Length: 126
Length: 126
Length: 126
Length: 126
Image 1 (cartoon, rainbow over the protein chains, first blue to last red):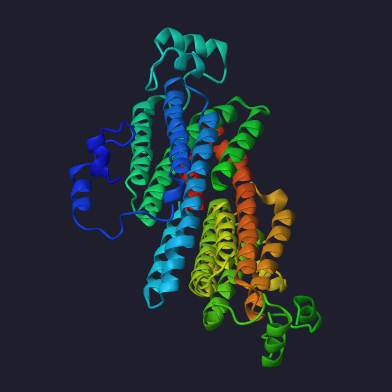
Image 2 (cartoon, rainbow over the protein chains, first blue to last red):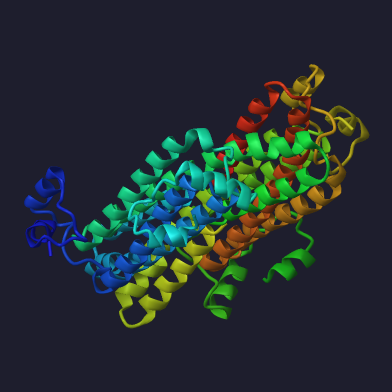
């Protein structure tokens, strides 16, 4: 389901895309479409909803003057959740997108590996 | 008001405690009450709301089959946001809670420093 | 030549194996032998020697009572150096070992990707 | 013992400082002298020597064509060692330097806390 369809369907969990997003979708984009993570979407959504709940919990903790250190513990838990999500996504990406590029042969594998490494570097530096 | 009570009150978006509640908390729990970060609550709330928006954006990206690497970039941005929040909270904690313990003298400073270091270790390991 | 043998040979500074030794290793141990990083060995050695120098610098700083914060800055530089080394090694591993497994087909790619992801998780958690 | 004395003593573990270091020492530097970590120098030296050994081990692994993933595991161990060292140094710094600034009163505490937070941020970003 594209975001345009999601918007038409009025799905509450999939808010209307911004104009920029819609425009990007309108152009043929070979980077959209079923990806490596497709068959685990439900698991990803569940994980992200839990993290979203933790972030809302952090706002509540600020409102309620909770002790700084307890808030920091919750930040660590949220960050850990985000990292687990990233690692799972990365594993699926390597297994499908990168492996597919290798099977097709040619120079695409170099670009795919460089791209994945840059993403890992960004994760490491945060 | 505990977060469980807050949840029961049905406030969906991190309800602000009344003054009466805040006062009650200050007496009931020495870990509650005005902390080092009190005067920057608005900034913290704003920052956390932006991170919450990013997490919702991640769910949208999964729904819309966005390319894995672009999702990972957004994860890095969210993690960076959480770390900046943690660092600001930590700075205020050191400036107020830890410095106050030092001024009061006695053994409290050792406990406060050990506690802060453990929190930093948790942030480093995620 | 195992590292124990290398130590017995008394070579103080990471002795280069002879061609004969390298060949022996290739047959004796499937995890030894020319890997993805083979053609960049000189670059890796140079990078690691610089990191080793930084670690020796840290010992000197301790001996000389250098200010704590300046030591921490040097620790960050060394850690950054180790991470850059790890990322380069990982990129070569993905480009060669993982891509090769994909080309060969079969179930090996799953094992290789799981192994690489676990290594990335270890890097993230430190 | 200053680095100049170390050089005169010909201590093998404390190599002669570069000209730049010697010059910095020659000027009166209020950031030198016994710091928070002074009474744990032996422990720090031991820890750093172990990390130095791990970095030399990494060079040996490259020379011996060890499998990429095993090298990455060793990198994670070295990084973990550096982080433990940094955390211990930081804890001593907070307990002594930062707490002292708080006790002395005045504006120094703000500068010390900002400096410590910046150091923690550098550790987090690597």
